[in-house]
Image 1 (tube, rainbow, N blue to C red):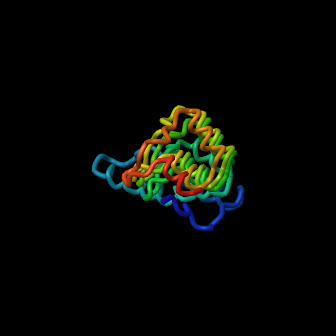
Image 2: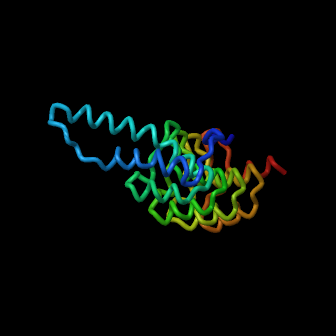
Image 3: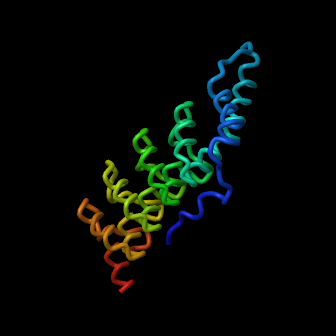
Length: 199
């Protein structure tokens, strides 16, 4: 049922040595250098910056995955859009949540990450937290102003995931916050029917 799969490969960032000393300055240059070409060359300059930018984004996601709060902060301080998405629609917040990186989750939320953002299949960071059994992160995400009945493209909600994967405490918290256990997904399932099937 759950469609958020492994978010990144197992490549890991290292603190300060390679990334901050070599790659990161290129990122800063790519996003902060002013256009110095004539109008005729402006499009080529913009394309080059966009290419450099695109090549460096995976380091941001890798830092979210591995819990490298220092690198996350460096990218954000340099002006990287906090909710930039990869080709699957994952944000750094989703990646950090899926990998249990609470410190990064807290940093991203503090810096204004869109907690209710959805990936290409409509899944949210909260759905990832429920799926992974990340109780503390889920509670943090639930404290933000999102619709408790937010549905993915299959019509599934966080409380449906909690029912499916036996996350009883999270299910109770979601219900307390207004999650509708009778809301149906596109297959006609609800949190209530899912829970009954799992007994």
